[in-house]
Amino acid sequence: MPTLPALDIKTGINESPHVIILGAGASKACCPNGDRHGRHLPIMANLVDTIALRELLERNGIEIETNFETIYSKIHSSGNQNLLDELDTKIREYFGKLRLPETPTLYDYLILSLRPKDAIITFNWDPLLPQAFQRWRHLGNVLPAIHFLHGNVDIGIDTERKASRFLSDGPARGYNITPTNLLYPIDKKDYATDPFIADQWRAAEFFLSNAYYATIYGYSAPKSDVEARSLLLKAWQNNSTRELAQFSIVDIREPKEVEAAWSDFIIRNHGGASKDFSWNYLMRHPRRTCEAFAFATLQQTPWEEDPFPRAESLTELEKWVTPLLAEEASGLLAGKPHH
Image (cartoon, rainbow, N blue to C red; front, side):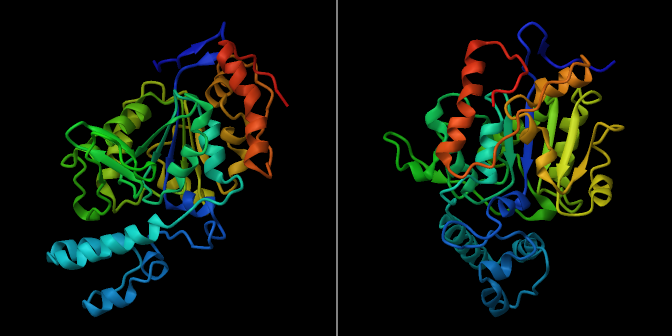
């Protein structure tokens, strides 16, 4: 028998988490026309040319392939440490300069669509998600946890204190903060050796094994990335609520193709793929996704939708979300629109 989610009918609160897993496609969708300064967000298929690595690779006799991770794995196997270090430097330089637009982006909506019980799990190196988190943290302890499975150019760690922080926040007194590792050979990723990465994966597995709603955005879980896919699938299969939970994917590919790629994760009709993010509960029931889904499917009393607006400014978006924060602080969720 499947386990019911942690739903309290009296308060209307579902403590089971909503988990979002992000790939490079999400950052691309966050800034489809480039970042604040027009810099484009690379994906693995175009990273070589977007970051201008072709000349460096050809000079070192490296065959250019579609997937940069495949290229990196071959260089790693060759033992050319100087080239590996140069690639790491160039990637950090390019990603480190990226800046969010000053208007609301996909990442602003994602950050505000979840509560502290929820989590965003990202494979992305770029600093856009940290920047979105930073510009909303003044709201207090109302934002989701974020975990970086492949490190991030804006995350630093103190291994002795087992602490992490945003590098863009500047140095912290008494801490010895160093950047996280970014690059891993795809054919033998070892997530257990690096203490920070191991900790991030443990957190990701915990959230996914307890999730009542999972959304995948812009991450294809390629079969070549065996270890990552295996860890995610194992965590989801350990989720005793998954037969009642929802597993949705947002991807630019054809839905049937995407659903076939994620077939191991989707149970019966409890999930599916779409090219259009606006249908997702994150946009239709922000900050109430697990409650709205539980009341619709388990209680047969659907909540009315209260969808995000297409805000023109961050101020407008904050004004819109404020009533939801006030209702959460009251300890009772009524399931009625505030707008």
